[in-house]
Image 1 (cartoon, helix red, strand yellow):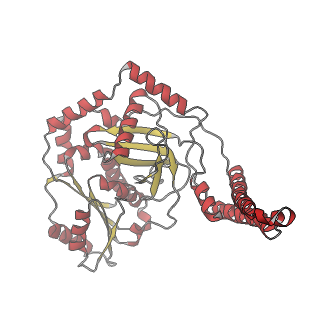
Image 2: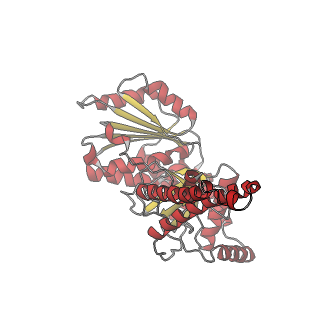
Image 3: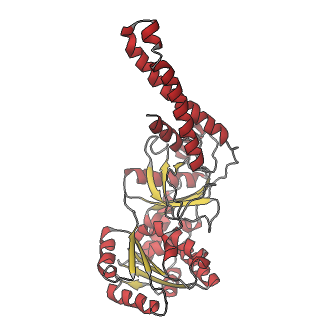
Length: 402
């Protein structure tokens, strides 16, 4: 019981929302994104749990981290696709916040943090295969690899990304530009293969973006009501960068909780204070007091941990709507994007893609190819079918859908 209580309190030890750097929406792909301040080291591909009281005060939902601290120090980014009741309400909430120029109220829990170096450094070549919004767990990993070429000199990096339409490429074009710039800076051989699986009229995509952005502007009465509700929720709250309780502090809290609770319970239980001094029939009261002492000992340990790791609040930053969400998408811009990346229509021809990778690998002495796939189950099955028979490939499937 002590371990359970201490773990639950540690996982929700922050009584303050997390400071938001930027939040926005991509209307054409029904996806919102939030970038949060985070002073705790994390590994690309980690999972973070989000709680948004305005959407639901009790629900916590896991999302893959799409950033890496080596590329954006002190920041953590997640993308959330509008696919269910909670995510649709979150999308609408972020949309309202950006229209009102206020910060969304977000709580974060990152109870499990990777301590090992990413497996991408173990291979002489690495292949990232993403499907749609499933690319998000791989985004930070790809940036991490390109930022650290000294970890594996001469490593070849491949990116294969299937998207339903061009609008997703347009929304993530800044990330594509970042990985190209990093590869050119460090001399990394980066091969990008982008495939659009569905037909999409560019003009329709343009009109869809304009209509959704226009719908973000709420009426004056609705805006006033929304701002009043957010002001009430923010009373007494001071957003801070997320700080995770480190491993040593966790062990310290558990040890203190066990000692405090164990000492108090032992003195009452084996001393039989109530049963001996008052009445033996009052043993249920003694059991209740023992339970209360367990909780009290755990609370003492948690209080000491918060006193030890207390940090001052930092000024809040008003988030701005991301430019990519409101930028007009012209047909010329989209055509230039497709031409620059040589975007192909239809799905990749898997045997040809595998042979292309193997041909580039033949010149390397230490042949090992790591394949990291994230996306729909059908995509993972296709990767297993075409990559697993070759002994050089080592396939790692990311947990995208939880």
